[in-house]
Length: 338
Image 1 (cartoon, rainbow, N blue to C red):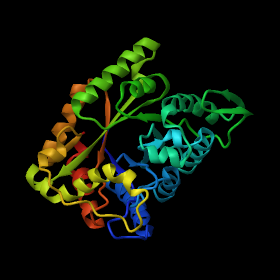
Image 2 (cartoon, rainbow, N blue to C red):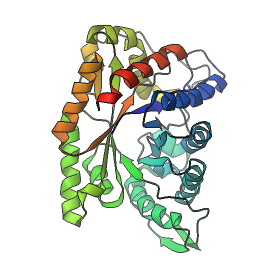
Image 3 (tube, rainbow, N blue to C red):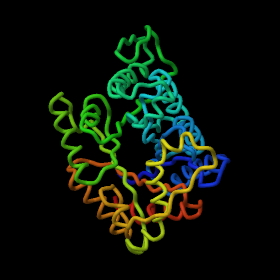
Image 4 (spheres, helix red, strand yellow):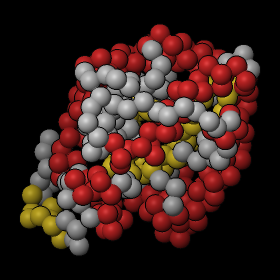
């Protein structure tokens, strides 16, 4: 099962205004992830954020595909209701061709009112949009003409080309029961970022829905990602990565406010939270390699199903050498034991 790495976001550091470095480093990190032996590399999407949080995952996935040869490439996640499903199908098929079959397409609903308003999408109909997108994509990738008449999308009989060289797995991200059950009906798996108790509950929803619709749960993928902070001890790991972790967490609360703010990107406010407050109620593990391995294996044991794992351990505030050092610690001390 191994370990994946992400979520690559190409964000600027406070005070920067040139994204060239961020995008160059994003591709270099994917190359380093492959060199270090990670199974997959994952990207993440948002729009209009002052630090440029990555908006174009499939464009970047195509660049990663050309810079690497083995590593799986996952989107974690594309905010599907902000994209026209036919364009999404075309772009994903193109990446699958360029990568020779290494793409996993992770999709999510999105939550930002500003993003939906910016793209003229209806936040209230995002669930209905996702239902239709999950039904449209397999038909589009067949290359055969089809027609769709839905409550959100309608288009005439047409064939979407090119066709991907192999089937593109589709994962659904999100924590709500409706999203998880939708995935069990219409997708290949879930891409989850929740604490162990909540993940066990999500697994239960999937298994229940599979039974209800007559699906073999062995055909379903459970992918879980968590923040992994390696160090000689938990305290030392937190001390080294505390500010980077805080900056990542704070930016989510700042996203919508930042959309109308002039450049350069703002710095996070001073950290006033304790280490326990930074990690409580989150899928975040800090400590020695053995402690991280045990936490991840315990998550698998509790889930009771095969679970693929990824480390959300990309921190834009770290310099490149520190980021690669973190990756190497996970690749050498954690991944071989999973």
